[in-house]
Length: 98
Image 1 (cartoon, rainbow, N blue to C red):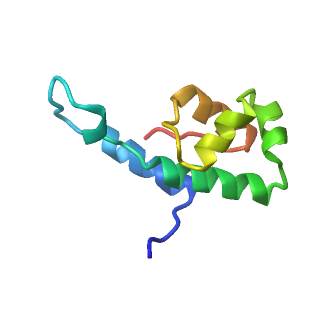
Image 2 (image 1 turned 180 degrees about the vertical axis):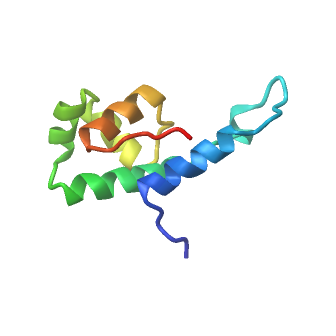
Image 3 (image 1 turned 60 degrees about the vertical axis):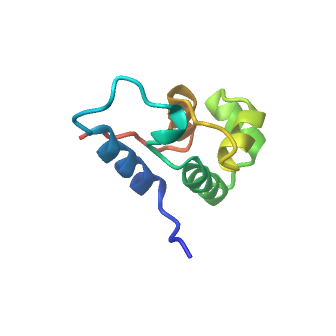
């Protein structure tokens, strides 16, 4: 059984993986995943629910469509940075770079 990570832990892991010094010129997308969409989605859903927000309310606060929020929370889509940032901001979270 895998421990559920907090959104902060997922982001920290993502940041660590971005500090790779050398990458091949081209990498097939499926071979280089820097974060787990399912884990990020689960963390976002957990935070949204803890704030008592519906998907619709989060959509309105973030400017991200409800269908995108559903796909993100279910881990069924790659999270683009702009959407992730908008969702995090609406949830009162900050993305910290070290």
